[in-house]
Amino acid sequence: TDRELMSIYEVSRHTARHAVSQLGADGILRRSRGVGTSVDRRTFERSLGSLYSLFQVVEESGVPQRSDVRALEIVTDAEAAEQLDLEPTTPLVLIDRLRWAGDDPLAIDRIWLPADIAEPLLHADFTHTSLYNELDRSAGMHPNAGWERIHPGIPTAEERASLQLEDDEAVFSIERLGTYNGDPVEWRVTTIRGDRFTLVADWTAGQRNELRPHMLVG
Image (cartoon, rainbow, N blue to C red; front, side, top):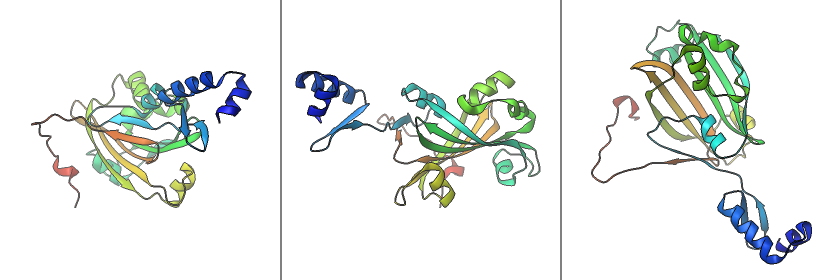
């Protein structure tokens, strides 16, 4: 409350309210009538139709981020290989991470890449870096085009526990195919908290976007 802030920081009511107002405008604090002032849990926003890195989205918001690497290994995965237009038994590098924003788990991120491109990534430290930074460093490239399919979902019991979700909280499931000069190089499936992630679409009257046949879901 205002009275508590005045006592803690030994300032006037005007100074306390002005500071809270400014921090509220910056998205750091939230004020509720009858409740008082609390730290706002930052929602991360990104624009549809643009190449982005979740690492960069979180970092630019001013919230520290890190990853717990749950798997970093060579595997075979027929479904991922099909998305990458490869034979079912083609070796792939799997990167499975739990992504954190501050003290809160934000997303479960699973990525498959052709091993002939991504094998050097097996020696990378993904605790505080992005896939694209590491691809640039090891292979001199990263996806420069692709598509995403985004839909709301109900998390599995394992996902709910990892993301520390309540029973009534949902997630976004994001599937991404990244290509480099037309060749598929990244298949990614991200499960991200619906209460912490916002999607924004820019549009112009008279413009029509082309729907890709493989994105149509029955």
